[in-house]
Length: 101
Image (tube, rainbow, N blue to C red; front, side):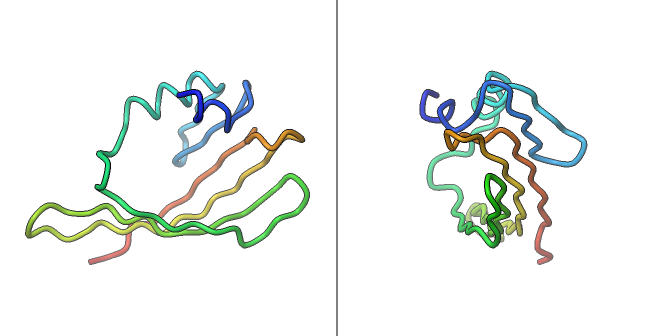
């Protein structure tokens, strides 16, 4: 929890999906704890595609492994990130689309 908390400002606006905004580091920590993926159940690759001062845009792919005989779920992600001068995220917005089978 301390490592996660160190990523965000106290008053972060965190938007993990459309029309869902969490405000404040404590709310983000609670959401991360509440909705954890089991270790080894996913893999991901993300990279920045644009950086301008304290603003960054990143893209990536998240793959959640299906159970035996099930297909993986693959999501394509776009992130808009704004940082404070200390390098902590003060605004996080994510968009994603599930890849068709």
